[in-house]
Image 1 (cartoon, rainbow, N blue to C red):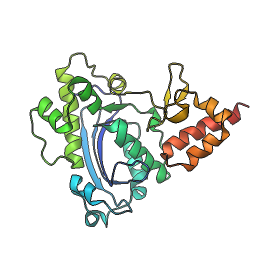
Image 2: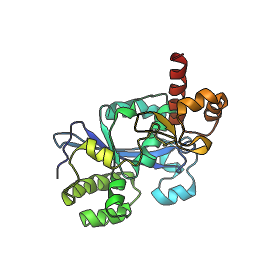
Image 3: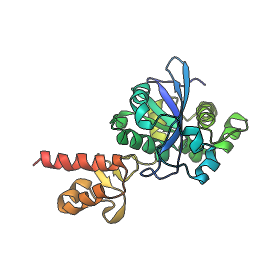
Length: 256
């Protein structure tokens, strides 16, 4: 089934030095850009993370320090990558929980502040888990009747994810071939920041989603406990999370 798109949809996958969004870095990005007319573009880039790749990470994706020593850093490709995904919605496998927060963090570290909050995000893993409860390789076998060779190669995983979404639309009549619907269906929370440290309530208010102030309005906490903002800014939180807290903080000053 061809996807019903209003905007180009970029399926992407990251290979990284680890799973800590704050400390780890991207070593490979691959994407399939699908246009509303059905045209597809595929691109894969290796990236020098500027830090050693741990052996346990190399054991998963097969990328070594030697492989990326002469590759550009993310900062060197950030502007061109941002232009390539400008105006596109994004899709991936477990992308809402990891790939999108990691990509947003790398853009902020590179000083490229693209507005990803206006994008629609489709997480194929979430659709899969709601429907079948399995892994990417099992999903590929289940939906496409193919074995996933070279799993944890960014390009292989990206293409498999794209094929799975099309097969999911064929299999489930209740799934609407509409990116707005798929984005909403594959989202667990209405996140304010990509890491989900804050979520929107049904009134569109930012609610803290962790720690001692969980369930409270971020605006109220920042006003009543001035030290909380400093703790966030100085702590090991993603840059995107700090940015969203800062926007709320500044909004409070402007409303005085």
